[in-house]
Image 1 (spheres, rainbow, N blue to C red):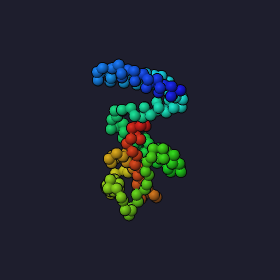
Image 2: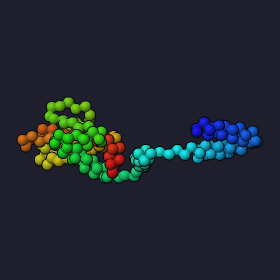
Image 3: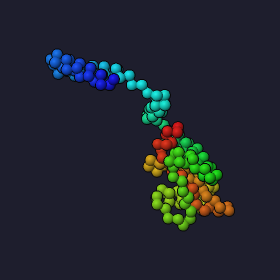
Image 4: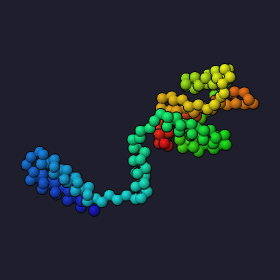
Length: 171
């Protein structure tokens, strides 16, 4: 059936090109032929493919989000990932493609921002400020941190790095 359409296309192209006298006329003819060919194909897709396409279009839709919304979403998802981690479940962590690790006193730290956050927790502790969860931005990631307290003593921090793209998609 496709061959029949192609033969019609080439025959029509040949006839019309032979008749066309100017360059602009040729471009109009090409456009008309392409439209005819596309219209004749019928191109039907399954419901599953249609839903997949709609989801992809929704994901690629331009969203205008405020920084506060991203920070709030980071707190929300960070707390949930931390809660799931403590219960032995890492499904949300895998779904969002996050990194979760613990920095303890005496550990060497690869990322400068992690070390700065760890030092800020120690500074707060020495000045008597209460320790609580925190959100920071580091490039294209948001960092959710939570203090690790063992027997009422600060032992380190949980660090959860969430890609900003995942946060925006979940808004």
